[in-house]
Image (cartoon, rainbow, N blue to C red; front, side, top):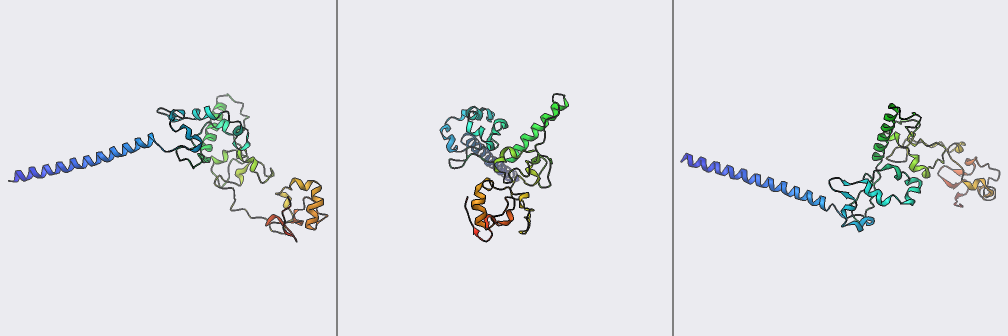
Length: 260
């Protein structure tokens, strides 16, 4: 009787183990099936690439995935992209999928700015130059670091290797007054500087940081700008006589006045 009960218990245990293995196998099979399905149909392409929906080989290489060479083959003759100062860097980066992500749907732009990718590219390029120097293949006169300081307390060492002016020169609100070493003040996360405190409203040294608009160096200044502000004898560099620190168009004694 005991043997019969033991055999029944063993059989039940084996059945339970088999059932558990079957469930686990089914789970793994389902996961693998889902993974394969995701790889086969990762999602719809962007609107710009929608016409390639059934032409995966146009971008993907078997066992390698999407390669930059495939992108460059189609976009290398994009003159407008390569001639615009903020986007001219595309001619040398040679890495596309880091910022341009596809299969995210028709409504989403396939562009996601990734400064970390540029940091990696800059780091590898710098290492290559240093290696060439060590081998005597370079005179050593090349400018390895685009920044003058090389580092700043609020950014990483890799970030300081980026040449911000290559892409952002057309957005320089300092009009070149502070040079091109943006990393002395700015980080890649945001342009605003939390630590910055504007000089008091009584300051008369505005021209140290602010550059006058082109119209101030024409007859427009003496005929329009100065008379409107009631400062006919004001000099172009005497910003404080007419302007207030709230905004350039907030004119002393006049208020908000937009005449440009």
